[in-house]
Length: 113
Length: 116
Image 1: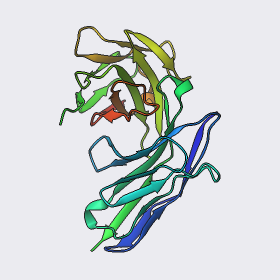
Image 2: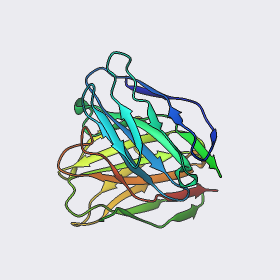
Image 3: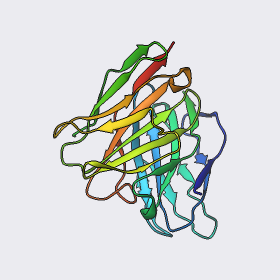
Image 4: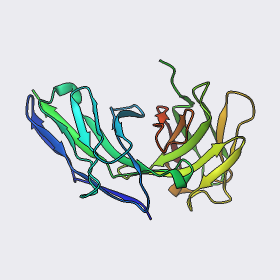
């Protein structure tokens, strides 16, 4: 079956540091890949997505590139802010799964001033 | 921006009782979902719903669970006889013109269910 493996957290960084959160996946077909963010007390929000190999998703300074050869979709940001503190989830969805998305465990990021 | 709304935000119930969790998806969305997140664990798929029927369900979604779209706006999850292990945050989600394959999920803020 499908699975998503994320870098274990929690991750603590200072403001303006570089962020990488690793994500690798296992899928039987050709999935779409997503990063969702969850702020305290809220639901998950889409951060960015990529639907085919070599696509780069980007939003709010975050980027991730769909790497089919390494089955990865690592999240990066060049300079984090305190407001980026949240839980980040990598997820995949396959056409054949009729709408089911598979999520990673989530990585908690804390950015200190 | 349109959003998915869930009520209540927190529900406490006794073991064996029935609960109904309510959701209003985004109005022009076609696909509806329930996910749950047990504290400190990953987000798990429960069920997807399209064209007034279940399109897929997980092994978690056993006979104790049911979903319904009773009118044009609400989407409900019923747990018939709650167990302690049903305690979790339940998220409703919807997606637009396609399934979540390439149309991202829009989540509500969740209902925290506590079974005592």
